Length: 119
Picture 1: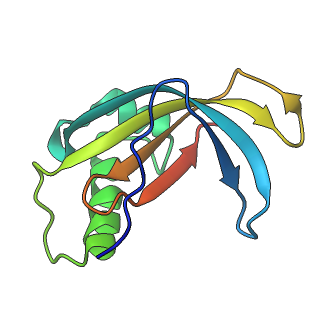
Picture 2 (picture 1 turned 90 degrees about the horizontal axis):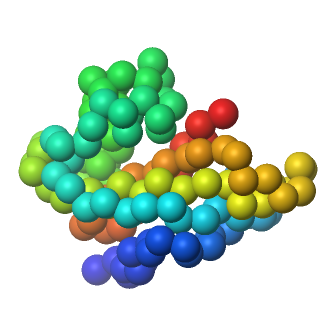
């Protein structure tokens, strides 16, 4: 059985690492909402910024990710997910900056984290 990551809370600060494990960002949690996978909004999908930013692309990409991550052949579309909205509080290259908005999605089961930056 895997370990559980505590759910983010509004005001939390987290360090984001690059592919080599080096810290590059500090993010501040702005809001956290738990809802069924099939209730994630078009706005959330658009702001996450992946693919063509559509809800259909978001659902396809995240369903594939969760099926692989959870080792399930099909994803229960009513499975709860944790949707976190956060902002960049510090960027290594730029110094303090609080204008970027980002979002991530956390699978409730294994609490696997997937982060995408909105540029």
